[in-house]
Image (tube, rainbow, N blue to C red; front, side, top):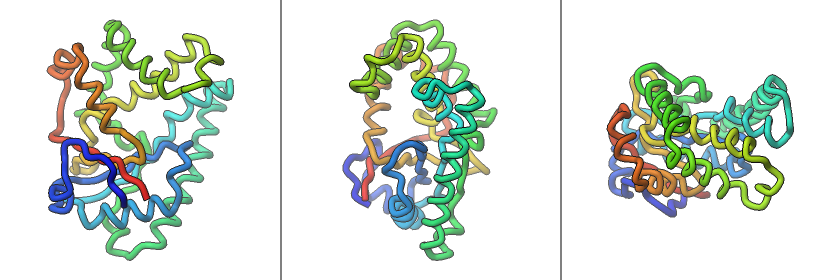
Length: 228
């Protein structure tokens, strides 16, 4: 893989198997082809401290479907699951192209698999409370959403933007701590985009120290911006 940017890590650390890499797949992102997934696994598995994971971010897509397609909640969720099935097919295609020793070191997870009671849920509750009560925090997150929307923002109302911001809100526990699954801390976030810069910007905000002191951290985290 071509690594364009490092956050809190380096090539020697990654090659030295300090981290457990994971790939979070946004199911509407066309970058996640079978070729990209296979190359990620080929690169990540030999560099994992313990294991490598792929997380299919399925249920969060219902938020986008409700806003952009004007779908009912149940229809939006059903559409997200259908798209997630396509992603799982791509993952299977990628895995089938790889040696067994790589396949055996990989966990394939859905979003619900990383939601657990020790780390994720307590941190999500903190972020949710801050979103409801802390105006600078809420404004920062909605600002990120506005920046991601680009020109289509003119078609949306303020309640739409706030609802879309909840996608980011629900990702924050994973973004700032990684995640635990079956006793493994997945802590190297690999993504074809500047995921580390979002955390960097977030952690530089005046409201961050007070929030940080309330969170439960599993251990160090890192990320890389990676392309084919």
